[in-house]
Length: 168
Image 1 (cartoon, rainbow, N blue to C red):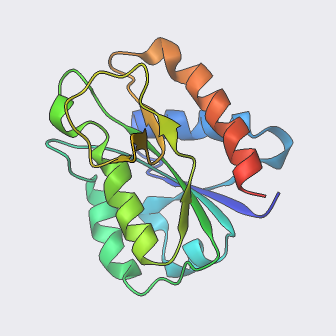
Image 2: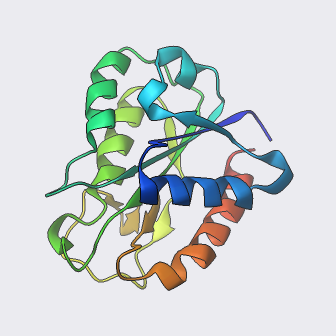
């Protein structure tokens, strides 16, 4: 498998937990963990495949560390790179913008020339709206630790299996 970077806020409890579970699920071909809080343009450019993670804050916003980083990455060149996105959200507490962070990050990385991979089914989720939707699928892996933590492990395992195929 090509060189893979796993980017998320390492100082965030739930997102970091999911990121580590994703890394472990890759097994011997583990992705390198890169702290978004310390990442720069070169961090993103050195990988062929990227896994990007973020929770959705408040009413559909990205966490502060992503909001502060994205303007610095404005001229990022991602042509030929594949990006998979995982996002955390609360489909019961925030049903009108469930995992919007996935959609916001997908828009940014697509505009930089990346191919978004790792789309997943919306089956098993109940929500009203999400910027993470396209053609009836999520643009990445949607995790709801608040209401469906019992499904997280199986969702991660299936997604990583999918990514191993899509990243080659």
